[in-house]
Length: 506
Image (cartoon, rainbow, N blue to C red):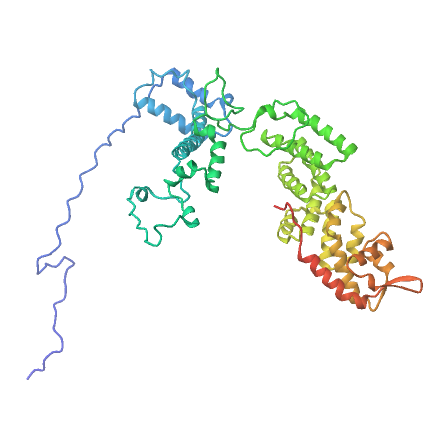
């Protein structure tokens, strides 16, 4: 018996021809080859439109440098120009439009902006007029109630109130008189009763707005005359003053400025000369400050930002420093910082030093860090700024000896600012002296260390804070018993640093 094979024998392949498929294929036959490419069809030629000469001249005028308007860039002008010409071409009005009189694209953009700005003002005026008419109806009808009620609530029929038998024969009480029913007000007026506080307030309001309620506006300096058209006021930028008065009281603006009461730049220059002369002769700060504020107001409403503006703010700031008016000084200092950013001529180094000393006084570390970050290496080497930075460093290190040496040698008008916080720094230094030098020190030592001019000033400073009992004579010299007075001056130091007057700080 022949053994069975463990595999199936297969006939060897003799050729490379594709074997015949035993089963039908499920794939579709391949697509036929594409036809040979034919000759490329010619591209459609671009139609060149022949623009009329008037349109070409209009485009040339739009791009002329003489017709350029500040605030309207070239890209916006080109977009508007394309829109104008495209709309005219689509509507077939290229030849019918008078291109010589048509406003340029940049002029149209400016006109659209002005209309956009004027629309909210007109809407506000209309709303205000409607509100006035509503107030007029309320006053005329006399139906104003202290508590507002909805329309549905007003129209809803009120249920009849039943009076209890024990109240039927009694007179009205004070509580009933305080209830404000609409039908009760005429009876109150007829009987001569005293109207309520709200009615008195409404009567005053009616008198104040009486002209508005009747439809007549009060006279305005900008009201058009009979020959001028009646138009609504729109702020179109700075005004030019026409007043020739050198002196003018300061009044806060509550409406648009009147050019007849605003002084132009030549008059303001004469006003500054007058104020400087009067300050030297009379030293009347209330008058000079009021005149300087009106001078600054006239500069602001006319948008005058020149070297003269810097001079006005600098002079006013120096006068305010001399009189200790930190509020006015800080307002001038804030404006000067913005003016110096415009690269105008002035004493920027001097007032940057004042700004550092001011922040030392107000203990404003945040703004102090901003000022230090803005200083350049060249500015830090300037005399006034270098002095202010050294004073700040001495206080930060607790080096009162160095600080009072700098206090006695302050440039410009920085001493007026340092006088404002020298007292508290003297208290802090005296508290440290009482801790370090025990049991006593000579008063002369205190005078030299704390920057006093005489021993009398030092003794008066000690007595002002209740230290007269700790001064004594010893061997012909006045001494301060530091061991016993340490707690007194430490408590005074805490109170001095607990409250800082930052009037006018922004």
